[in-house]
Length: 119
Image (cartoon, rainbow, N blue to C red):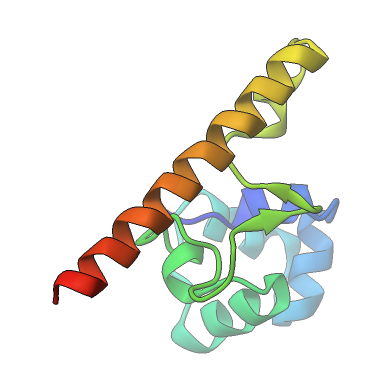
């Protein structure tokens, strides 16, 4: 599994745009997105750099876009939900999701600090 299509769509790019980055046809990009052709290491690295994500994120081995950074997208906490998941929700529901994500991140930070003190 990979996230090429997701990242491409988030950045409003088409398969031809990605093909130009990799020096391949748009059909080849479609094969990569549908996992009918494997990305070589060099091209995977090139895409990860282009999208500013880790290779592990690109290849779905991690849900953390970039280790060592707060996982944000457009100055909002990235919740792992797709834009289509937010289409039919109210502003109040969106605020509740953001507040809950902040609560979880804060709670996680406190837990990490406690573990470091114990060690």
